[in-house]
Length: 378
Image: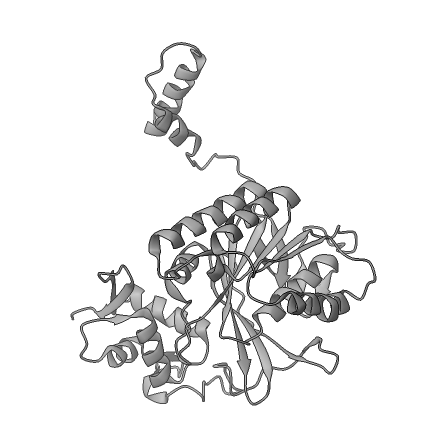
């Protein structure tokens, strides 16, 4: 008999003698309830949307939407809200296991705005979201602007709202305002735990909007709460405004399941509504007709005998770190992208993962518990 079966048999024996003294502590009883086996009967993940046909924004999970100021984050959440009432907005579509998408009930949405004025929230609702829905009927939205209340009350009111209105989709714009100090590690972990438990308990997807650091080359999420969000989120999406074209870009940068390789590009028309547009060729690190990456620094491209190319991650990351003992994640990304001319987060993350697998880099934590990288001695 396996160890797992022995443990389950012991638990069954203890439960069969209900009312009698038990040798299992409350902690052990709870632990057994949390056991996962190959035979565990678990509900499949339920996704709210699709992006280019790939499921995304799952119930019971946190999703992060990040970007610099004015990079289109609220525009993206507005499209999610509109898509909750209709079937499709640009490349975002309601997810369903059925081939018939027309019989879906609208999703209930809770939009919790902590940043903008009351007038701005209402203007977005009236002149953007409702226009995208193209319906006079007000959908199942519960919208609150809590900028005027303190950060502690914002947290308690959010919990109360989710419990009361039982939404399918929660948009917290932005979570930085649920804490007093974005670099308070204990408070950041506490807030993330609250949001995770709330998403699981209410079977909803909680979208957390958070700014990236202010430096133009630093795309990390702000503060300790950003670090905690990156660790806990099921998916992370980055928003960017490309100049001088004034085109917005939405790109999935991290995921625990479905990789969405294609970024979505859109611009705003004269009516203030988003319309799909082609991706600017200078923005992407995509192949040209010859299968090459002309935008990348060719010093870090190598070819095999069959002329297949690849990035020399060993040389690239060693050059980026140089003679330094270690680098933070933000510093490493900035230097790697500068040297190689990489503009895609997803491409950078894939190279970082490759460097880790090949043993080029060592990952550790500094005295403030931030991730740092060093070149592995050869």
